[in-house]
Amino acid sequence: MALNKLAIASVSLSLYAGHLLDEKIRAAAQHGYSGIEIVYSDLETYSKSQNIPIHTAAQKINQICNKNNIKALSLAPFENFEGANSPLETRLQLAKHWLEIARLLKAPYLQVPSIFTNDCSRDAAVITAEMQALADLASATKPTVSIAYEALSWGTNHSTWESALDLVNRVNRPNFGLCMDTFHEATKIWGDPSSPSGKQMYAQERLRDSLRRFVRDCPLEKLFYVQLSDGERFDPPYSATHPWAVPGEAKEFTWSRHARPFPFESEFGGYLPIGEIARAWIVEMGFKGWVSMEVFDRRLRDGSVSVETAARRGVESWRKVQAEMEEKSRL
Image (cartoon, rainbow, N blue to C red; front, top):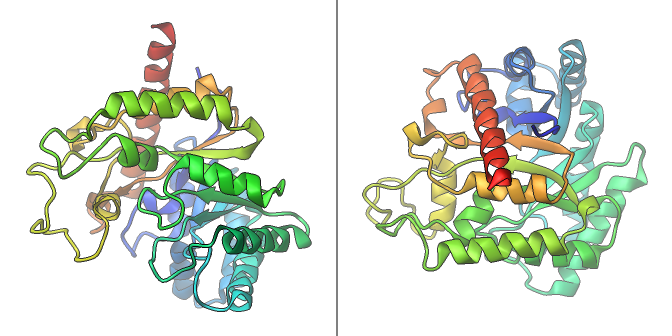
């Protein structure tokens, strides 16, 4: 049985604006989660509902977390920072605000996804220097906030863990490491929503090789936390005429926004090899840190699914992941 503490992203408990952050925190605590990833938009909605500044809202949310014996794991997602064409100083000022909020939440991590616009620098030296500046800003005030960098499968500069780890090594800061998400690993090299089979060519071989390399090459101390979600099988396959299709949007991004149920929710079309990935990252790596559910299920948008139901689904999913990891470990 995995000993990892379980967290959940606040948006994975509901995407409905009427379900406020304090309600989500209480539901997560009641269902046994140890942590919650605070999504900035949820905090913003809460602050507006209470008619208080966002800094005050962060302090109140920290108090609610403490009262419910649950930890704010991260503030997320600080998007499109690396290599963006806006002045670096402007981006660092925004980062300073996010870091202030993270500290008020007592969140140890700021989650930073890889940039996914084309309007950015591709220069590795520029990107490295900017991420060093971000990491240094995050450690300039105590307590230090760590930057959990996540390679999105549709990322412009970094879309694989290998590329992200190379950036981590170049940045070379103790508070700069990886957030690894099963959805991005699986949709980069295994799943394909536009294929009738739902899979890429040589999917299993490529996944097996990728996981083997990760276990071999990623320093354990640079694996900050793991996120779990599944992906829904498209039937019929995704195409430009699909009702979710947006011109110019990567199909993986479309997939992520609409069809990411909890792991092993086959009743909602989940089919990605989550157990195999989780076993490598958690069991084979000997990872004892945080595991967080980060799903984007369109069924959570209209308020018809309660926060409590989503929290329960996440816990049941984690049990299935643990059982699958144990089963694969015996094989």
